[in-house]
Image 1 (cartoon, rainbow, N blue to C red):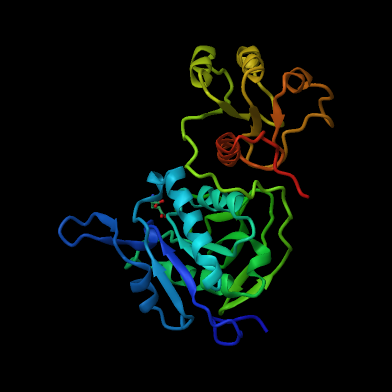
Image 2 (tube, rainbow, N blue to C red; image 1 turned 90 degrees about the vertical axis):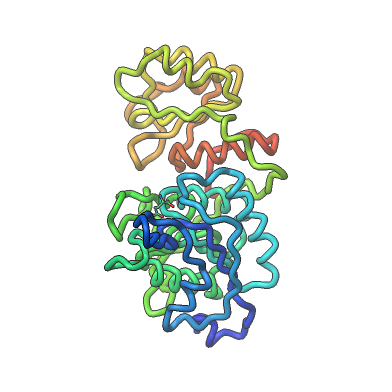
Length: 329
Ligand code: GLU
């Protein structure tokens, strides 16, 4: 039997709930109407009938997640390391705009911790507020005996989605969260996790930097048709690493190609695709099409999107490690 809300499982340790702000906690100021992230995790949990699991609450900061930095996410990692031994899983309440990046950062640093992130697409008090249900579902997942084998997941709208692949794909829909490659791990309904697939074992970094990576270290550029060569050169100048969301399976326009090849001689350059799914890989359709890039040392990232490759490269640089594409073990 799965641990349902802490009632049927022998592990009576509490689950830690780390609140960080985001729509899930944004109450309207009575005077101005402006919403601010002031609802605490404890207040939200107290108002939920059916959430009877023992919980420990903490709130290291309360922000809208567009203001989250590597330093915020490193704080979460440090709290997770501190809390894990005495707790039955960790839940992180996070703004949805950068939730997938927070989940990925955590997963890279502590891949074996049982962490479930949740948030809300509708704010408290609005019809369809989804924060309470998502918190309840995240607690259910974090307390499940299987949670440790899942690593870091995002739990939104009853879906359990892996940190390496989950994306916010719609700016407003309740069903916004999905995966790029269809890697849904499971669903959660009525306080039961239903596992649908096993998460991949991946070559995570598995190391925690002592200081937050420098957010300016990596230049991240999304390629377009008719790119401006001068702008491109400016965007990558001085970077310690470069991530380019290439066109299609890895196309780089001639207008910027020699600049990118030149940069690859000096710093790590990683290519991702801007298409939203699929690998950077030319061999089947266009044999040898990227040979000049590859022989210059450009790395082809087949699984991650650009923002996640930027996190992996930023962490790698701060830890003094070479970038290796994310691969199954
Ligand atoms: N932009 C805010 C944030 O990401 C609100 C969006 C949300 O949480 O859904 O924190």
